[in-house]
Image: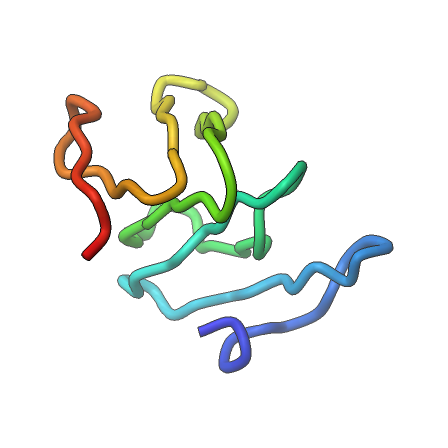
Length: 89
């Protein structure tokens, strides 16, 4: 997905900025002190966001409301909105 939909890179780490098609499953990876990649999404459109950790527990909140807060923990994937998780298989 990143290779296919990258429109540019940003910052000193050349983080890819990805503009996926509307309705696409998008994957956000937490690693060390950053999230990867950056997404450029259309306002008012729907996407399915998958978040995952490469190392340890990371917090996630959707700005500006911060209503959607979650944790992602390496080796686990979320099953439901209550935060229950199961191991990756």
